[in-house]
Length: 440
Image (cartoon, rainbow, N blue to C red; front, side):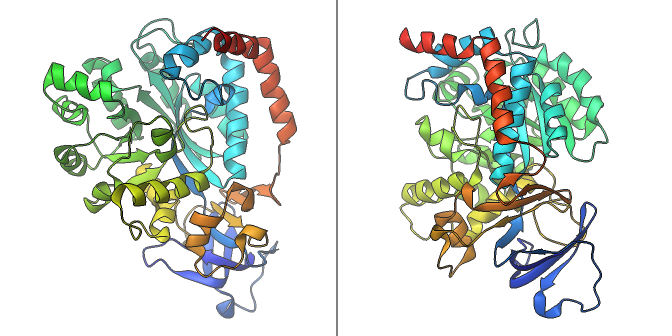
């Protein structure tokens, strides 16, 4: 039992209990309510006093690349850094061990920030899935497919064969799902995109792709097909409720109609989108159309952080400015995007995203003792405008506590960093990165 918590259920009625409790057993939530109604004869094995902390569902990161921690802060302000720095270093240095140790470090960062579920796309996803399993996280791990040789396959679009072998290995796992993620519509053949959609249907898992993110992408489809990327994807028959479109910065009215028609989900990465000067997506129009939208950090080299507190504040600031409307997106709506909204994007709204009896016991406690957390008139405003990842005190995933008192329960942060540093050293990552920077 967790008692004396300010419980934000995020349920359909948006119930909250300023002095509330939550009861869990094994991996499920059994009950939630006000302390005044707590059964006096209740028996329990363990009790945690929240001491007024805000208790809410674990946050959901709908789009990231957890194998890319080594690239954080590398060439951030250079134009075309992807091709100038990231791709060459990736090809030279990325291997199973580096991806695996990066994944564990990234998952630790997310857990310490209250993220309990994530959707990843990168390479060596078998190793990344193993890392997620070890860290007791919940996630969808999707192998990238692209029209070139990559660090883990020997032929262009070989990621598809990797995915065909990878997907069945994780069927039936309680927390981890395997999937497939074509890089983008412009970097794969029609046949590969269609086969990826078939794999998603066969194994009943969400799949992901970067869509309508780049200006050159929009120009290419306009010139070659007289279509937008979304219109192109509809024509080849791959849009579905299982499809998660990442970014969607450049959308037409017709694109939004198509996303709604096929119940496509959208992963919105405001931090990475604006850092790279790509634009602000039409999220208000997407939500008004009834399209599921969740927040994503993108990779640690794109948005530089793996926490959703920063994304919530960036979301508020950019969208209010973009719309020239201070009242746009009240804080409560933004917290929804980080919790139940993300759960809907991943097709997990029946399992996670709210504090309700029968759902998975994925929840976090945000302490209210720090100097930045007083006073609190509106807990949602406190979470969006005042709180940061450092205020996350306790984290539970499937009923297991993975963070206590702002520290990992089963892992040592310094050890995880040391293991990642060693993997970087073994492949000469830092030396090669500095050399690449010096040459530009």
